[in-house]
Length: 257
Ligand SMILES: Nc1ncnc2c1ncn2[C@@H]1O[C@H](COP(=O)(O)OP(=O)(O)O)[C@@H](O)[C@H]1O
Ligand SMILES: [Mg+2]
Image 1 (spheres, rainbow, N blue to C red):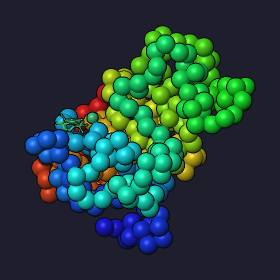
Image 2: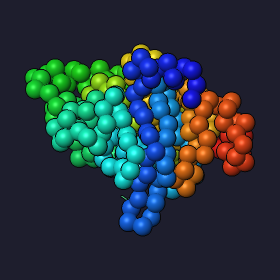
Image 3: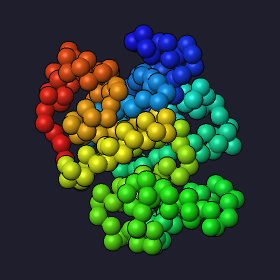
Image 4: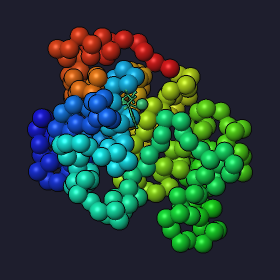
């Protein structure tokens, strides 16, 4: 653990902590004894091959899944110890952009963004609409309130998904493969948005990606997960010099897109 992280922990500035977390589905172990921590206000990238356990890690942070052993601490609270209402309360401040962007296809882009506001607040309609419009503007979709999701490009759908995730004013934003299926220019734009969110909203981000270039742009620290084990953890430089050949090969590859 670095001095910076150690200091962060002492001052209570650790947004997420995994301590020896394991998770299995039936007899299939998908996370084995995983430990890492994410300092508040930083971007942590999870790298690894497909099926490594990255999405499961995000779901454990969000409380969608429960660890079999070990503890997952989010904003100082042990997720497993929270009762139903407290967990719901904790999840309200977590924005989650799923891999598929998962927009509701039968309602407009603007109403997709307004959805969490309508569900979690009792604000009047006009205020909710204007807030949703403001969020769309922030992601460069100011003219798309009344568009239907099916008419948007892949990059625009990701942006709309981000706007919706931001509606809850998350202190923690979980993003699963933001650049999957996007061209390099569009994925760079999404990266810039993520950097902007961290900087201007002082949010903590955990981002899953296969895209090394993207990881280099956005990460403060990263972890490499393989077959449910955390093989390496640290800064870009540290991972480039990892003792694990697989990690080195991944870091020095030119995987993108
Ligand atoms: N709800 C589930 N039930 C059973 N197996 C699951 C479930 N979710 C994930 N898995 C399995 O756990 C492993 C890790 O999945 P995942 O975290 O989605 O991988 P990735 O690193 O590609 O995001 C995979 O083998 C996957 O099939
Ligand atoms: Mg995944």
